Amino acid sequence: MQFKSITAVALFAATISHMSYPLAVGAQAGITSLSRKVDAVRMGWTRTDVISTLGTPSSVITPGKLKANDIDRGPEIEYVLTWNNPGCSRIEVFFDARNRVTGTDAGRMCAYPMKPLPAGYSCSKQSNAKYCR
Image 1 (cartoon, rainbow, N blue to C red):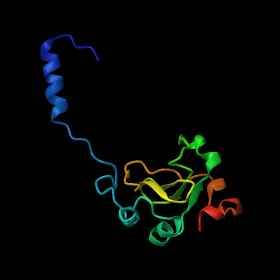
Image 2: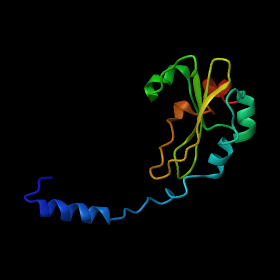
Image 3: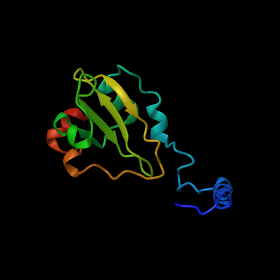
């Protein structure tokens, strides 16, 4: 944006400083009941501990699919279990090769909900089942 005078710059600055932008529906809360449960998950927990706290995951990002999801595989991340979190981004729990929690994403971004992962990631798919129980 190019201004022709200092007065125009001052007027523009005064206008935008008094504007308010509405939040998307659900953005102000940012916490679902499932997101609250993620707060209980601790580093080092086993997959069994996590599933008993959060319930059965919706999908899994397996080692071979990490890169396609912009996740770098390393000692801290072997696979990621995910839970659908209606109205917000999905819940993600990261595991190492020992099946221990190395990180979480509580899915608190509610302004722009994520699309579910494709069917090939589903925990109901036979090849993914070993990660999801």
